[in-house]
Structure formats: C-alpha cells, structure tokens
Image 1 (tube, rainbow, N blue to C red):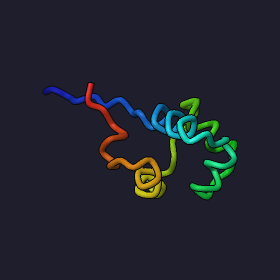
Image 2: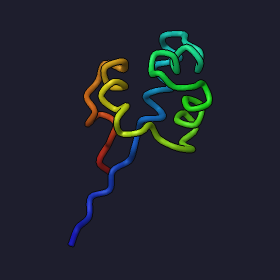
Image 3: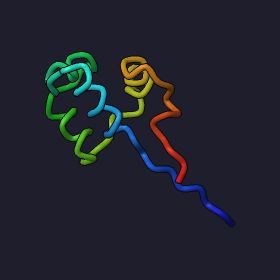
Length: 72
C-alpha cells in the first residue's frame, strides 16, 4: 500500500503574501478576522488555520485551497 504524503505550505504562503503586500501580522489578522498572535502561530508552523478559514484565506492569497498542499 502506497500512502501519499502532503506537505502543508500555508505558513510559507501567508508569510510571502503578507511581506509582499507590506502588511503587519496585525493587519493581516484583521483581513482574516483573527488576532496577530494567530497569524504569528500560522507563520511559525505552531498551528494551522482552522479549515473554515481556508476558502477566505485562498481568496485573499489569490489561490485555490488545493495550492496549500503540495504532494511530496
């Protein structure tokens, strides 16, 4: 049995978007409706956004939700 492994790239995409658009973690958090601390944790891979945030996050980052997952 072969199991596919996916690498979650949400943290890299959030960080890249935020820096490109010159947003602070607080400003990005306001876009998402979360605290700056939540954004910090997402960017540091301490935790991931709740699944309910993925469609909104994809809209802000101008990508598809599938783009957050890369197959290794």
